[in-house]
Image (cartoon, rainbow, N blue to C red):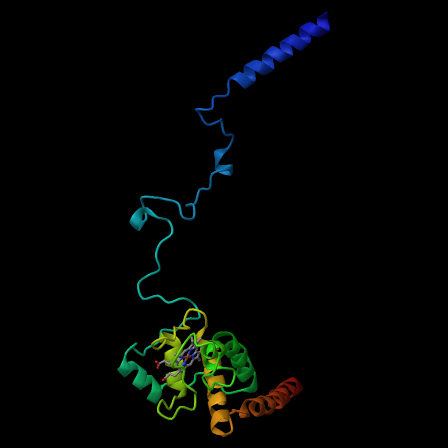
Length: 215
Ligand code: HEC
Protein backbone atom coordinates (compact mmCIF):
# COMPACT_ATOMS: atom_id res chain seq x y z
CA UNK A 1 0.00 0.00 0.00
CA UNK A 2 2.76 2.44 1.05
CA UNK A 3 4.68 1.43 -2.09
CA UNK A 4 1.85 2.34 -4.47
CA UNK A 5 1.37 5.73 -2.75
CA UNK A 6 5.05 6.40 -3.42
CA UNK A 7 4.62 5.44 -7.06
CA UNK A 8 1.61 7.76 -7.42
CA UNK A 9 3.49 10.67 -5.76
CA UNK A 10 6.47 10.21 -8.08
CA UNK A 11 4.16 9.96 -11.11
CA UNK A 12 2.36 13.21 -10.18
CA UNK A 13 5.72 14.94 -9.72
CA UNK A 14 6.92 13.81 -13.12
CA UNK A 15 3.71 14.82 -14.88
CA UNK A 16 3.81 18.26 -13.27
CA UNK A 17 7.45 18.74 -14.36
CA UNK A 18 6.73 17.72 -17.96
CA UNK A 19 3.54 19.76 -18.15
CA UNK A 20 5.54 22.94 -17.40
CA UNK A 21 7.11 22.72 -20.89
CA UNK A 22 5.57 25.24 -23.26
CA UNK A 23 6.21 24.86 -27.00
CA UNK A 24 5.59 28.57 -27.55
CA UNK A 25 8.53 29.56 -25.33
CA UNK A 26 12.15 28.44 -25.67
CA UNK A 27 13.34 26.15 -22.96
CA UNK A 28 15.49 27.43 -20.15
CA UNK A 29 19.11 27.39 -21.26
CA UNK A 30 21.76 26.74 -18.69
CA UNK A 31 24.86 28.82 -19.59
CA UNK A 32 23.61 30.02 -23.01
CA UNK A 33 27.11 31.12 -24.09
CA UNK A 34 27.98 27.50 -24.48
CA UNK A 35 25.36 27.12 -27.22
CA UNK A 36 25.19 30.46 -28.98
CA UNK A 37 28.49 31.80 -30.35
CA UNK A 38 29.71 35.20 -29.16
CA UNK A 39 31.20 35.96 -32.61
CA UNK A 40 29.14 36.68 -35.70
CA UNK A 41 27.63 33.71 -37.53
CA UNK A 42 28.91 33.12 -41.06
CA UNK A 43 26.30 34.46 -43.52
CA UNK A 44 24.35 35.87 -40.55
CA UNK A 45 22.46 39.14 -40.82
CA UNK A 46 23.76 41.95 -38.62
CA UNK A 47 23.12 45.67 -38.89
CA UNK A 48 26.77 46.60 -38.24
CA UNK A 49 27.91 45.30 -41.62
CA UNK A 50 27.43 47.15 -44.91
CA UNK A 51 24.42 45.56 -46.58
CA UNK A 52 23.51 43.92 -43.27
CA UNK A 53 25.40 40.74 -44.20
CA UNK A 54 28.29 39.15 -42.31
CA UNK A 55 29.61 37.69 -45.59
CA UNK A 56 30.90 40.68 -47.52
CA UNK A 57 31.90 41.10 -51.14
CA UNK A 58 35.63 41.18 -51.93
CA UNK A 59 37.14 44.66 -52.13
CA UNK A 60 36.90 46.21 -55.57
CA UNK A 61 39.80 45.22 -57.81
CA UNK A 62 40.79 42.17 -55.75
CA UNK A 63 41.62 39.01 -57.69
CA UNK A 64 41.37 35.35 -56.67
CA UNK A 65 44.56 33.61 -55.53
CA UNK A 66 46.37 32.02 -58.45
CA UNK A 67 44.48 34.05 -61.04
CA UNK A 68 46.10 36.83 -63.05
CA UNK A 69 44.22 39.45 -65.05
CA UNK A 70 44.57 39.10 -68.81
CA UNK A 71 45.50 42.44 -70.32
CA UNK A 72 44.53 41.89 -73.95
CA UNK A 73 41.10 43.07 -75.05
CA UNK A 74 38.49 40.89 -76.69
CA UNK A 75 38.66 42.78 -80.00
CA UNK A 76 40.41 42.58 -83.36
CA UNK A 77 43.12 44.91 -82.04
CA UNK A 78 43.53 42.85 -78.86
CA UNK A 79 43.82 39.69 -80.96
CA UNK A 80 46.46 41.25 -83.21
CA UNK A 81 48.42 42.58 -80.24
CA UNK A 82 48.42 39.18 -78.52
CA UNK A 83 49.40 37.52 -81.79
CA UNK A 84 52.43 39.80 -82.19
CA UNK A 85 53.62 40.28 -78.63
CA UNK A 86 52.23 37.72 -76.16
CA UNK A 87 54.78 35.01 -75.36
CA UNK A 88 54.40 31.67 -73.62
CA UNK A 89 54.76 32.16 -69.86
CA UNK A 90 56.06 28.64 -69.22
CA UNK A 91 59.03 26.67 -70.54
CA UNK A 92 58.65 24.24 -73.41
CA UNK A 93 59.49 21.05 -71.52
CA UNK A 94 58.52 17.43 -72.26
CA UNK A 95 56.35 17.39 -69.12
CA UNK A 96 54.44 20.49 -70.21
CA UNK A 97 54.01 19.02 -73.67
CA UNK A 98 52.55 15.80 -72.25
CA UNK A 99 50.23 17.72 -69.92
CA UNK A 100 49.24 19.89 -72.88
CA UNK A 101 48.46 16.82 -74.99
CA UNK A 102 46.20 15.37 -72.27
CA UNK A 103 44.27 18.66 -72.03
CA UNK A 104 44.17 19.10 -75.80
CA UNK A 105 42.70 15.62 -76.26
CA UNK A 106 39.97 16.49 -73.76
CA UNK A 107 39.03 20.00 -74.92
CA UNK A 108 40.15 20.54 -78.50
CA UNK A 109 40.61 17.27 -80.42
CA UNK A 110 36.86 16.74 -80.85
CA UNK A 111 36.87 19.60 -83.39
CA UNK A 112 40.51 20.17 -84.35
CA UNK A 113 41.45 16.46 -84.60
CA UNK A 114 44.18 14.64 -82.67
CA UNK A 115 46.75 15.85 -85.24
CA UNK A 116 45.45 19.43 -85.36
CA UNK A 117 44.54 19.13 -89.03
CA UNK A 118 40.98 20.38 -88.44
CA UNK A 119 39.41 16.97 -89.00
CA UNK A 120 38.02 16.09 -85.57
CA UNK A 121 35.04 13.80 -85.00
CA UNK A 122 32.54 16.68 -85.00
CA UNK A 123 33.91 17.91 -88.35
CA UNK A 124 33.72 14.42 -89.87
CA UNK A 125 30.11 14.12 -88.71
CA UNK A 126 29.45 17.57 -90.18
CA UNK A 127 28.31 18.99 -86.84
CA UNK A 128 30.59 22.01 -87.18
CA UNK A 129 32.14 23.78 -90.14
CA UNK A 130 35.17 25.94 -90.74
CA UNK A 131 37.63 24.33 -88.30
CA UNK A 132 41.06 25.29 -89.63
CA UNK A 133 44.22 23.20 -89.70
CA UNK A 134 46.92 24.62 -87.42
CA UNK A 135 49.33 25.00 -90.36
CA UNK A 136 46.81 27.21 -92.22
CA UNK A 137 49.11 29.79 -93.82
CA UNK A 138 46.42 32.48 -93.97
CA UNK A 139 45.96 32.36 -90.20
CA UNK A 140 49.66 31.99 -89.30
CA UNK A 141 48.85 31.31 -85.65
CA UNK A 142 51.40 32.20 -82.95
CA UNK A 143 51.62 31.22 -79.28
CA UNK A 144 50.03 34.55 -78.39
CA UNK A 145 47.11 34.11 -80.79
CA UNK A 146 46.49 30.54 -79.64
CA UNK A 147 46.32 31.70 -76.02
CA UNK A 148 44.08 34.60 -76.98
CA UNK A 149 41.48 32.49 -78.83
CA UNK A 150 41.44 29.98 -75.96
CA UNK A 151 40.83 32.82 -73.51
CA UNK A 152 38.00 34.56 -75.39
CA UNK A 153 36.90 32.05 -78.04
CA UNK A 154 36.58 32.98 -81.70
CA UNK A 155 33.32 32.90 -83.71
CA UNK A 156 31.85 29.38 -83.33
CA UNK A 157 34.67 28.26 -81.03
CA UNK A 158 33.88 28.91 -77.36
CA UNK A 159 36.11 30.27 -74.60
CA UNK A 160 38.13 27.87 -72.46
CA UNK A 161 38.94 30.41 -69.76
CA UNK A 162 36.53 28.80 -67.28
CA UNK A 163 37.60 25.18 -67.80
CA UNK A 164 41.36 25.70 -67.75
CA UNK A 165 43.85 27.57 -65.57
CA UNK A 166 46.38 30.00 -67.01
CA UNK A 167 49.13 27.40 -66.61
CA UNK A 168 47.06 24.74 -68.36
CA UNK A 169 46.29 27.05 -71.27
CA UNK A 170 50.00 27.65 -71.80
CA UNK A 171 50.60 23.89 -71.74
CA UNK A 172 47.93 23.50 -74.45
CA UNK A 173 49.59 26.31 -76.42
CA UNK A 174 52.87 24.39 -76.37
CA UNK A 175 51.12 21.26 -77.64
CA UNK A 176 49.28 23.13 -80.41
CA UNK A 177 52.66 24.59 -81.44
CA UNK A 178 54.04 21.04 -81.56
CA UNK A 179 51.10 19.84 -83.73
CA UNK A 180 51.66 22.83 -86.03
CA UNK A 181 55.37 21.99 -86.32
CA UNK A 182 54.52 18.34 -87.07
CA UNK A 183 52.07 19.38 -89.80
CA UNK A 184 54.71 21.66 -91.32
CA UNK A 185 57.37 18.93 -91.10
CA UNK A 186 59.44 21.02 -88.65
CA UNK A 187 60.98 20.08 -85.30
CA UNK A 188 58.95 21.10 -82.26
CA UNK A 189 60.60 23.50 -79.82
CA UNK A 190 61.84 22.03 -76.53
CA UNK A 191 63.72 24.10 -73.92
CA UNK A 192 66.08 21.58 -72.40
CA UNK A 193 68.57 23.68 -70.41
CA UNK A 194 66.42 23.57 -67.25
CA UNK A 195 67.91 20.26 -66.06
CA UNK A 196 71.47 21.35 -66.79
CA UNK A 197 71.15 24.41 -64.53
CA UNK A 198 69.83 22.29 -61.64
CA UNK A 199 72.68 19.75 -61.86
CA UNK A 200 75.20 22.55 -61.75
CA UNK A 201 73.68 24.20 -58.66
CA UNK A 202 73.50 21.21 -56.32
CA UNK A 203 77.18 20.21 -56.01
CA UNK A 204 78.14 23.87 -55.73
CA UNK A 205 75.88 24.37 -52.70
CA UNK A 206 77.13 21.14 -51.14
CA UNK A 207 80.79 22.21 -51.28
CA UNK A 208 79.93 25.56 -49.77
CA UNK A 209 78.27 23.84 -46.82
CA UNK A 210 81.29 21.58 -46.32
CA UNK A 211 83.48 24.64 -46.40
CA UNK A 212 81.40 26.30 -43.65
CA UNK A 213 81.51 23.23 -41.46
CA UNK A 214 85.28 23.09 -41.66
CA UNK A 215 85.58 26.44 -39.86
C1 HEC B 1 33.44 23.20 -81.03
C2 HEC B 1 34.60 22.98 -81.87
C3 HEC B 1 35.92 23.53 -81.40
C4 HEC B 1 36.61 23.21 -80.26
C5 HEC B 1 36.21 22.21 -79.19
C6 HEC B 1 37.83 23.99 -80.30
N1 HEC B 1 37.87 24.77 -81.41
FE1 HEC B 1 39.40 25.95 -82.00
N2 HEC B 1 38.33 26.55 -83.62
C7 HEC B 1 37.08 26.10 -83.96
C8 HEC B 1 36.60 26.83 -85.12
C9 HEC B 1 35.26 26.64 -85.80
C10 HEC B 1 37.62 27.74 -85.45
C11 HEC B 1 37.60 28.79 -86.56
C12 HEC B 1 36.97 30.05 -85.99
C13 HEC B 1 36.92 31.18 -86.99
O1 HEC B 1 37.98 31.83 -87.18
O2 HEC B 1 35.86 31.41 -87.53
C14 HEC B 1 38.70 27.52 -84.51
C15 HEC B 1 39.90 28.21 -84.54
C16 HEC B 1 40.98 27.93 -83.73
C17 HEC B 1 42.29 28.52 -83.85
C18 HEC B 1 42.74 29.52 -84.91
C19 HEC B 1 42.31 30.90 -84.50
C20 HEC B 1 42.95 31.98 -85.34
O3 HEC B 1 43.77 32.70 -84.80
O4 HEC B 1 42.58 32.12 -86.50
C21 HEC B 1 43.06 28.02 -82.84
C22 HEC B 1 44.51 28.33 -82.55
C23 HEC B 1 42.22 27.12 -82.08
N3 HEC B 1 40.98 27.09 -82.65
C24 HEC B 1 42.64 26.44 -80.96
C25 HEC B 1 41.80 25.66 -80.17
C26 HEC B 1 42.20 25.05 -78.93
C27 HEC B 1 43.57 25.16 -78.33
C28 HEC B 1 41.12 24.37 -78.46
C29 HEC B 1 41.00 23.60 -77.14
C30 HEC B 1 41.25 24.35 -75.95
C31 HEC B 1 40.04 24.53 -79.42
N4 HEC B 1 40.49 25.33 -80.43
C32 HEC B 1 38.80 23.95 -79.31
C33 HEC B 1 36.37 25.12 -83.31
C34 HEC B 1 36.73 24.52 -82.12
